[in-house]
Image (cartoon, rainbow, N blue to C red; front, side, top):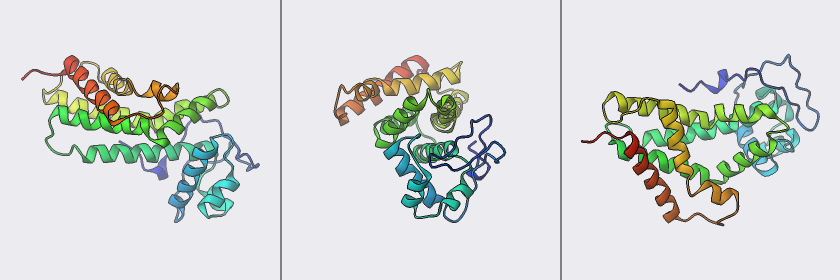
Length: 231
C-alpha cells in the first residue's frame, strides 16, 4: 500500500545540502511536509531536476521556477534527495493509478497484462523516464544511496502492484506462478526488450508505434507462455 506523502520517511539516507549552501544537518526530521504550495514546489523541482540533473539543481532555481521563497521549499523538504525522490514517487504513483483504473473489474488476464506492458513502455519512452534514469545512473557513484532509494520510491511501486495483481490472478486460477517477485521482475524486463537499449546507446532516434506494439505483444505472449493457464 502506498503511504501518504505526508508520512513519507527516508530511513538511513545520507543528508545532502542544496548546492547554494542550504544547511540540512542530520538532526532534521527526514519527512515530506505538505502545505498550500506543495504541488507548486514539486512541479518546479521536477522541471529543474530534469533540466539540470540532481547535483547541479539549486534551491534558488527551484524557488524561482516554482514562484515561491526558499523558506517555503525548506519547510516542505528537509533535503534535496527527499525532494528528488518525491518527484519520482508522484510520477510513478500517477502512472500506476492510471494503469489500474484501466483494468478495474473482471478483466481478462491478457488485457490486463497488455495495459500494464503499454504503461511500462510508455514510461520508458517518456522524457521524464529517460531523464530520471540517466540522472540516477550518472549520479550513482557520487550519491550511492540515490539509486536504491529511487528504485524503492519509483520502479519499486510498479513492481509492488504487479506482484499484487499477479497474485490475484493466481488465486483465481488464471495464472500459475510460484515466485511472484521473480515474475514481476521478468515482466518488467521483457517490456524493455527492443526499446531501452536502443534509446540508451543511441541506436534509434525514435521508437515507432510498431516498435512499441512489438515489445508489448511480445512481452505478453512470452509471459503467458510461461505462466498462463490453458482454458
